[in-house]
Length: 155
Image (cartoon, rainbow, N blue to C red; front, side, top):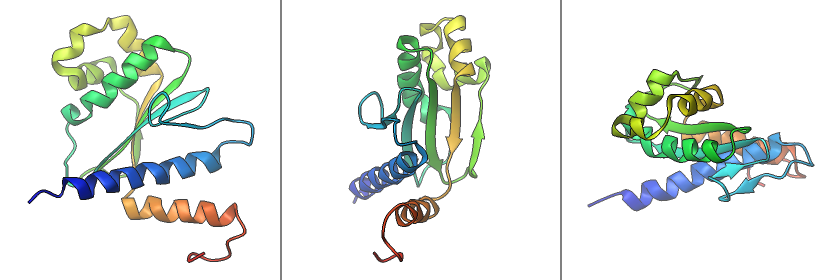
């Protein structure tokens, strides 16, 4: 029996919580778009969100979202690009990547992109490993509570 549906729904919930945090982080005049360019975007940045609760991190596991963001960068190099993800063996941290690390992630697709493009992307890309699902959920609830008339967690 597969738990694919459970993890897919949990991944959507994880993305929604991240979106809530981005909405409350933005100022009132910044439009935050959902599922337009990627999972979340503004005029200044693009975020791809991945939740891999049962997976251990390897560069190959982020290949597809990095390719999506690299292709977006090619079309709009003035924005910042973020891959926000959770893997069960990586602590909450942010990383910038080198050209060599990007090549490692791209694997057999590395020759599809020029060195100049990958260097530019590396300068505008951050890999964010997130806290746990529960920790992010509690932050999202706290942001809603702080920015609304709710007076407690249950509301």
